[in-house]
Amino acid sequence: MCPAVRTQRLPTVVVALLIIVLSVFSAGLSAAAPGGRSAAPGPPIGVGPVGTSLIHGDLASTDSTPLRGPGRTARVAASSIPGGACAATFVGSDGLVVSLCTKFIGLRPPQFAVATVVLFDPVTAAPLASKQLTKGGLLGGVYGYLDDRDRVVVADGSNSILRVAHRRTPRGWQLFIDDRVDLGRHIPAGDAVTGLAPDWQGRVWFATTNGVIGTVDAKRRVASMRLPRGEKLGNGLSVRPSGASVLSTHALYEMRAGKNGVPYPVWRRAYDRGPARKPGQLTWGSGTTPTYFGPGGDGWVAIADNAIRPNLLVYESDTGITVCSMKAFGTSGQGTENSILAWGNSLVVPSTYGYQYPPMAVDGPSSPANAAFTGGSTRIDVTAEGCRRVWENDDRIATLPRLSRADGLIHAFGYGPVRPGIQQLGPVYYLATDFETGRRVATLKVGDAPFDEPLELTGTIGPGNSMWQASLGRMIKISG
Image 1 (cartoon, rainbow, N blue to C red):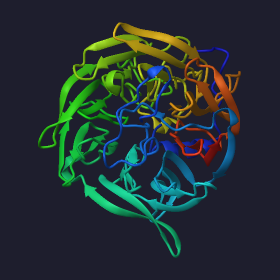
Image 2 (tube, rainbow, N blue to C red):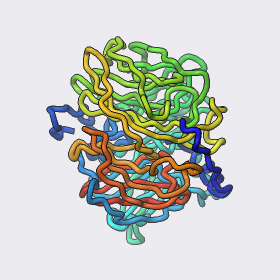
Image 3 (cartoon, rainbow, N blue to C red):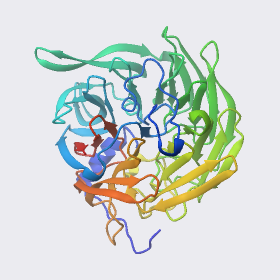
Image 4 (cartoon, rainbow, N blue to C red):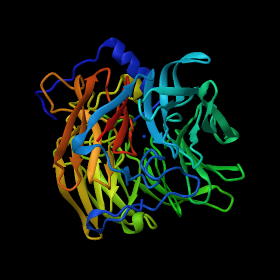
């Protein structure tokens, strides 16, 4: 932490908008690779285009894509003001862009901070249509995916799993609910769906804030179990052909579904959750989504814990045996709310320590109460003999970054270097960083905070060297 830097308060109106947005959501393959790196297992039947249909890039949550990003020739190609912040963006087989957004004001019925599916024009980025969902919990309107019919699969506030389709009518584009599965008695009152992901057996896995883990099969049968009392979930699920990885605020689980669809733990590994929530994280516990990587694309699973100096923990996916453990960060901020990026046997861990979330968006007080958002990312390579840090930089990334296996670059939005008196107010940049060296290769100003505050939102790399990334106020298309 740099003592010369102090946190600058955001204007009251900006804090109000941030509270509205973040009270509803938090931050969420066969391409050849340099050096013989292998990609994660391909998606199952029932999922849309490779690289643009899943929040974390693939079901292994590697946050990587086979598509090339804007890179060194990046430019702002288009933008629009959708009236809300869009936490996850997908591109369908028809080329249309669809996002899971939180509208600041919903109209049917009138209310604040409503999860909404929004369809965007792929050229102009203009909103074409929107569908307001039933208002609900923290992440239900964030974690979802695009199926093989270009329908958004998402949970709404009534704890139903919806498939939202789009069509063109004589009056223009329309979004509509094409299918609904009620999770009913499986989710207690006051709980809400946090994670949602398909698997290779045609099921949809779901997880709730208070620890219910369940599946819905092709015949719409729902089955569930519950984690030990007090264990919560604030992140998504990662899935591989044989099961799913679930990370609670206390432990990492490798789970499978029985013949009746009921999930059960294959192994459990508790981790150091630290003395309290850290500034720059939303809950007291790990802020990462589990990442499958390594041998066969899913032989290992990685998380970062919430120790005072966080540890990168890598386990064998089948057995839970520790492959390696080391301090996740050296010079970077000591904590992360972001998913770990993976390519082959290499991991990239971005720091969010000190990122300034509104007080009503987080779960309890942090320790310390605030800290400088110093940022930083680090690459760590893993072998059966242990972990080794390859590089660490000072990139202040403020979105969930995306790694392109086509161009070897890490693409994100973020801020410039830390300056005295300034934390998150000022210019916002598109950043491209070389995966091999950690060096910045492109910096493009895309806007100014607070209007374009990146909010740790998730973007996507689409066809044509394009990147779609939302900010607090806009949907932005960057082209190369």
